[in-house]
Image 1 (cartoon, rainbow, N blue to C red):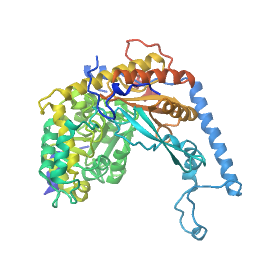
Image 2: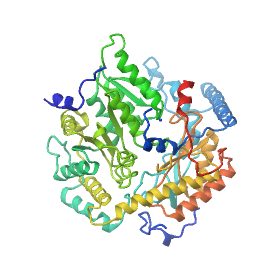
Image 3: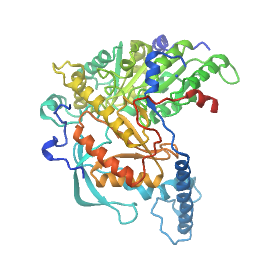
Image 4: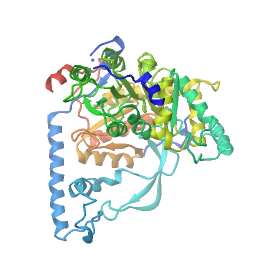
Length: 549
């Protein structure tokens, strides 16, 4: 019965910042106001607002050379370990287990042993405060080249937080705002200790799901306790053997894992490239499944609203046009876009003024704009009813914690204005203002940044591994917390720092960060852009990309 209901929707397919303490609200929200394929007009304009400038050739050469030198020294250090000259601190197989299948593959651990360990101090830094617009970082040092750390007992106070996904500033400790959450904690406790299908279904869970459906403008929705599992555990319930998944090449790991677990055939199209997507769709419809050439049972296009490493926005109107043309289905992951874009924070469907009903599966998380945890799937009622019975995440996972549920409800009502205030809209507009200002200033300075001008995710390209490490350490010295990302999470020549803007950032905070960015950019020679700043939109020739393939 449940499977029949699902087919109603997914029918078989046919073929040292210097900030004063009084200027910031300690670890909370700052309350002061701050002064391509089928083409549509909206889609064309959106596409021109994205920037993916290529670095000069010498940068790529120096990046490869840097990795080559580090790799050579890595093999040399492995030789020293093998002959007993250098001690290896990494986990190794015991001598009595040498005839077993190894748990630790030597080749797989090469990067960890010789590259990551040298720079490990830039990640997993422990903070000891609320991750608001500023936070406190516990100081730690290493006496054995980052194999182990020890705390010094000192704390770096008021580090400007440029790495958390606190887009609307709801990760806060304002007593008035958090009062409803405290009351629900007193009423329901902290944990549910059961699944939704047993005795873990609370009235506030159903209230939240109705609110999410209303917020998104769809028939129904279902919530889950973990954002990652919302993708990885629900995709296998939607598609399986005999189905085809067309996935953007920079999709999140949760989407990739869900696709692999489903057993469906997976084909990858170039990032936001409509020619590449349409080519795969046409081939799938004309040729069908390999060997048998039978029609695919379903064709599912998987994309993200905002791509978390690129800062780019999905070309939603064009993808919808293609999915209708080829009778495919569309899965949109709005983990980073829901609440962060659109005039009223309703994500990319609102930003591009498309009908939410044109997106078959709407997915999002509460971990970013809502300052909570968990995720949701929304769409037609038949889809949601089917997932309640068939999704592993729905059947086996513990229900959302009551205080977390109330936090989501509180934040969503604030965004919708249901609490009788305009605070939600003010935060959305403040985020948009901060995003445009920060991006424009970085471009003026000469940094290469990726993504759409409306995206609060701002990747700054650093390229060379040594500069990535030096940048992160120097910025922390200046009391600016940043996130740096490199290979293998990014292409080997595109290591970057990822800044996440927040409505809680004041203009003074952003100016302080920009001041340090300007100085550090000159110090480490990070201003690689060859473009002169102008009001002319950046253009991106995807036809050339397709021909070059």
